[in-house]
Structures are given as structure tokens and as C-alpha cells.
Figure 1 (cartoon, one colour):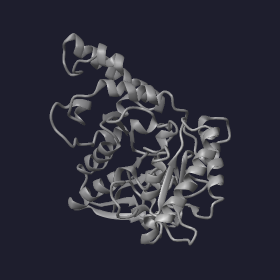
Figure 2: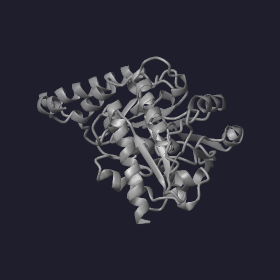
Figure 3: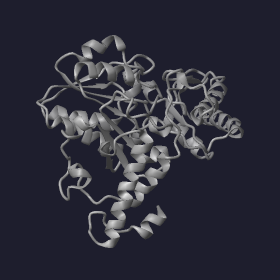
Figure 4: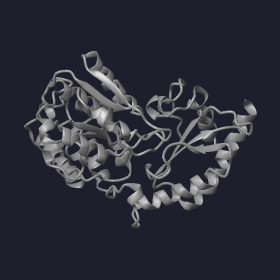
Length: 371
């Protein structure tokens, strides 16, 4: 990124030497990302992150359709909910696909959810708060059979591996670079030709990104995203992972840490244990009297011990209204504030696990004493 900022600092839309250098880097980054995701180069649209990608995908595509029904899961990220509400204001009906106690969509509802007047579907692939992986491939094939475009928020999945776009039965896919080791402020929308040609930009101006996203591109951020994505392994759904891949290694560490944590009866797993993101642990926290503890207080106590975790979605962690995801999964108001999320990565090693476990137990004791 530093090299690109020094050598290709021009506006990639300009015709002078510095601009042409920046334009070359930009398109090489597009080619590199397309190569890693096994997509057509034209399918790659650069955005400021997954939030913008989601809005371009849903609002930009729906603008060319007469209003119908949009189906989203009951456990979507706030960005998808915001875009869906935008369509609702434009006359669309909004239906929430119900989930079970583990955050998995109810597949018995598939025919009902995909029946007319459904015209567009958006499902989060890997749930950020509870880690559950939705059956995107199954739903995607069912949508294709019915001629219904489907979008997925794949932000959490791309943190762990590169999906194969050619074999994935999805029409639109959103992701953010910072989740897979790239810089903040840059993301991508993958859009197949039949959808891309119908997208309408959400902002006007210079007509960049093939008229889909006006605004001068940050070439240095693009270089960082392209480099980060090249370091990802191929995505394999965790139940199918058997080879010694980095996803397998991180899931082994995750399972060891989870087993150690669950020895304390004050910690209880949320989400699907088997079909979940390989780096993800989500818990409900209690005291010895089985009273739910506020997850935000545990986050602060662990931060004081040098360990960074989350309570709820990072994009709404400043709010203390309880988790809408846990609510959709059937947990009551007290439990909706008792969620805790641990995300493991390459910075976590075997020798760190005992310290993490002991620190969390200390945090539980500290917060329990204050209640």
C-alpha cells in the first residue's frame, strides 16, 4: 500500500502519467481479486465496504423491478436490515425467514418463502454474532430453479477463505476487506452479468466502476485488499474440512478453547456447534446463581486484561438494546444482553488458550461481584 501510494498516487480517471499508473494498478487489483475468487473480471465491483455493497446489491437491483417481496433471514446484519427497510419504503413487502434456537433458517419454510410474490432474497452466509452458517448452496439452487435472484452477505465467510464464485449458486455477494486482513474502508460486490447489467448506482458523479459507483477509487486500499485476499485459503464448509488447511487449524484451536470454556457452567454456547464459522465462539454468560450477566461488562473486564472480544455485532456494539439476533432465536430480553463473541485468528496460538480461559473466568467473577 505504501509503494502504491508513492508510485501511483494519481487519480485513476486522469489521463496524465500518474493517473494512468493508478488506473493500471486498479485494474490489476481487479484481475487479482477475480482470479482468487474464480470470477469474471467484470463481476468485481469495488465499494467502500460490505455496507455499501449490500445497499448497491439490494437497492440498486430492485430499482429495475416492480415492487414485490424481499425475503431476508431473521438474523441479518444491521446493514442488510437497513437496506431492506429502504425497499419497504419504496413499496416492497419484507418477509423475515424464521430461524431455530441455533440461528439456522427453518428449511421447512423454503417453499413458502420462495413462493410468489418473492422477487429477491438476501441471506447472511455466516452469522456474525452466533457463528451459524446458513445453507446458502441449497437455498441458492432453489432460487435459481424459480428464477429468483439471491444476494448473500459473505463478510464473515471471506474472513476464513475464498469461495469459488463459479460454483456458488448466488447472484450477488458482499464483503469487506478488513475482515480478511485488508485495510478498512474498502470492499467488494460480486455481481453476475445478468444482475450487474440491471444494477443502478446509489450515488452519481464521475461514473467510476463502470457507472455503478461514482467517486475516486482509493488505489492504495485496493492494493491492500488484493494482497490480503491472495493470502486466504480456499473456503471449505467446516463440516467438510478434513485436510490440514488453515481453516482446519483455526477450528481445532477454536474447539479446544470452547471445550475449556464450557467446563465452567456459567458459560453456554449459542449458535450451531457443527455448522459454524471455523474461528467463531459465541456464548451466553451467567453468574453462579444462573443470572444472566451483561456481555458489555464482560467485554470491558476482558479489555482491561488485554483481551479484545465483542458483545453482539461490532457495528451496533455502542447500543445496549439487546441483540435482535438472539431475540430472533427465541432468547428473552435478559439473555439478549448476555451474549459474548470471541473471534480467533492467526494471532492466537496454542499457548494463549490457558490465559484466555483464566482471564474470562476472572472477568466473570469480577462482574458477578458487582451485580
